[in-house]
Length: 278
Ligand SMILES: O=C(O)C(=O)C[C@]1(C(=O)O)C=C[C@@H](O)C=C1
Image (cartoon, rainbow, N blue to C red):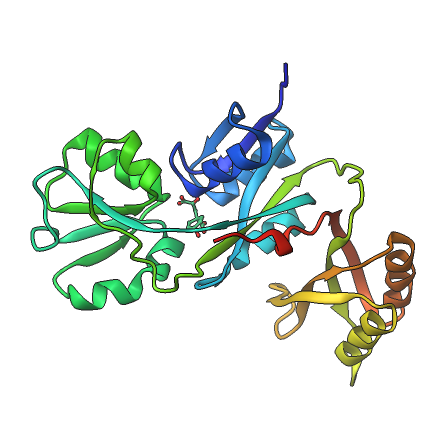
């Protein structure tokens, strides 16, 4: 019997729930959080074993505060998972696209569906904690003239009608999720790492860092800058790289020390990007 408890943002029927089931198995025990901050806190105080945390979406971009949570709460990235995200509009039976005046969903989900609503200017888009929670509230409170954007699974669970399917703007819409824990774990056949670098404030320091990655054959898959909040106009860089051999990656990290003021490995794990499905 597996005693793992996995924190997710949102409730059953959310995309985080789908990822938890795909990654840890259908029977996974989850702790449902109403914000990413709550999720990060649960991992930090180890009231859960691990968490699933969305980090970037191919349409809406990076979820910036999640980079900051991983860093501030000293969490470790132990894996990643990608899912194609298909958005649907759902409401109580009897509603139509004309009768709907308000649509609730997670802000990232609203961003993914912006184009669809251009044809319905009478509809107001309102941010909510979670896609599935918006669906649940409509069902439980019998909310009229109200719809939610969520997964088809959420419509099924909360017995709502689908008013429109696949309303996300880009058909390749995909979200990347991190699997995080407080204590790192040794991942077999790891070939990807997430790093945080604070570079020396001098000419060419970012270039030198990138040249080191190149010299050691590391492939950079992502670079994201984040302001250092108490030092205006200074930035930290969050970088993901893939590598073939761990010892070569370790050597590259030593070389990076020379061009950086501070650097931290946020996690070493298995690259799943090539498995992205439609
Ligand atoms: O609200 C949900 O269902 C979530 O799992 C959150 C979330 C996100 O944070 O990006 C997850 C995937 C989708 O990209 C949209 C929303």
